[in-house]
Length: 247
Image (tube, rainbow, N blue to C red; front, side, top):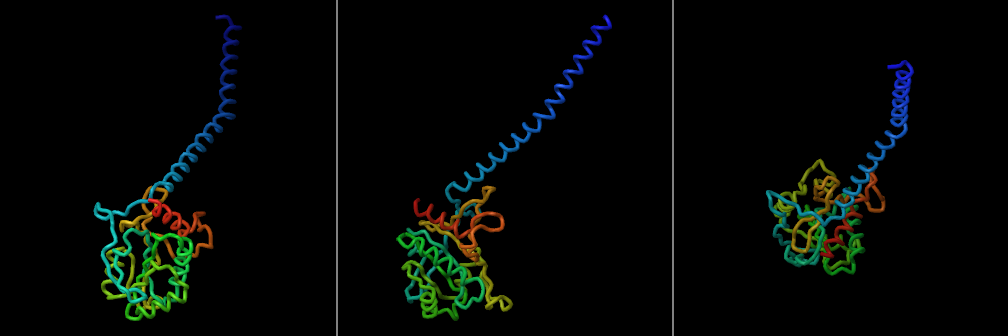
């Protein structure tokens, strides 16, 4: 092969290699970034779609968890059972009136729910005291008056200590115990449980598609988002109550 032809072919190889190199430097990073951005958008859309889904049921041993039967006296000395809440969406808490720490915050958050759903006949709240020896119907009535409780379906409930603890720890898997080292002498979770009209426990799902099960009741809603940029769980609870009321 003539020397000129060899040099020309060598020159062409160098030119093609140079073009490929320039393409790689300029365009490949853009393509990679685009793919990454599309993946992020896809993940965001999936996460948002997860939040918008209907609320999850809570399962135990393959069965939907339902509120166990209960029957306690309320602040008006009226006997209230789980059957009185059927047909209503309601929130459950365990508290005590002399709690020096989280209970006042929890009660104020529930008062906010009371105001938000004041026109909803199918909304209620069940507040079970974990100190029934002290929290008699009379004491609960005074507590309700202190916080301007007006909702007819917000019952502060008291009764036999062991039955209340059984309901909390076994029925709802929410901590409730006497503990002399805890503030006020009692240990409890500060969580809210959400119950649908048929008595089933419900909750929204997290970003991984798992039910969050409970809502934290110990942070005032007015604090806005949490440290992770997510809305406070009282805000989320309001949204989820509306979903269940619409079912």
